[in-house]
Image (cartoon, rainbow, N blue to C red; front, top):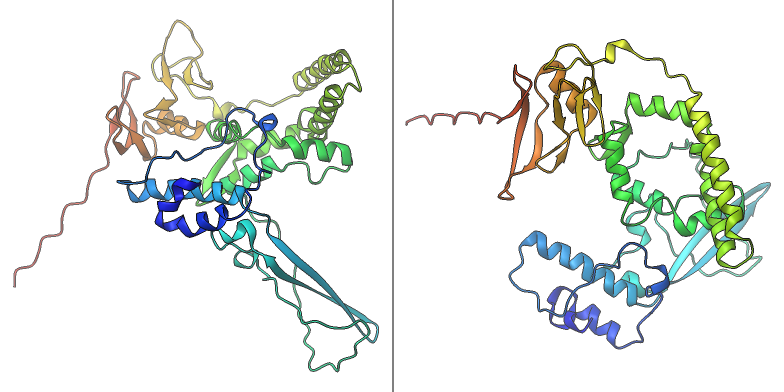
Length: 366
């Protein structure tokens, strides 16, 4: 924190923090999972690019927020009655800005219905109605997830579980860990279960098909995850022996395996893609490669190309159209980014094709 006293964008916030006792709620070695938090060093900041400094400021701001005091609010609910109609209003007054004062962040900025401060009234006061207006509104469906909102939903999973113990258990753990949640989402992309549409994430036809197939199965039961976490907590507290849980996991694994093997997925012959080399066997898709199902053929295509993972959609385009869509943000060995198409040659090998640049418009001479 003392390092930030000479960092102009945050030096005033650092001064305020050092005048008070540091809040230690964010420091708990027992809750460290795969890696510890990102921290700044005591090196003075200099010579950073705009993007680098933006990232540095994000990390430094979060450190100041973590060690700042809680934000204290006074929430008031005002209930009123007019004839047989009941009304209620909610008001919020910020008593101490606390950690929210580091970046001047308050709920009003992101709320569709901003929080307001209500005037002081005594219980039983009577006031004349000045005007009345009837508004008709419809409930809105939940918005599509972005990557940021999905990561947050994974972290705070379990809110809709009915069992309080299970809800509490999964709330503590969430789905995945801070180190694995992003890779889980990338796996959904690489297996063509989801796709991006602008900033939103939407399921593909394949993803919806898998969802419909397993949504009622044990393997998709979020409550089961909550029960496991709750059981592990009981083992930690010495309430039940580990062997009991171990046996239940073995039984569960057997049950879901039998359940999944019993499922009948009709094969769509139209989706069968023929190997471009032998022109006979089908191409099979794996996590890291797409390859011919005939081992004697030997054709394969690595899915990781210059730092990008080819989705099932990309591979189908290469095999059926002999050309992928434009892949953006590829990285060369020299760490330079470029855009390119992947083109399938007649012998089954692939090569890059770079987008043509538009010819410059000739200038008119006056």
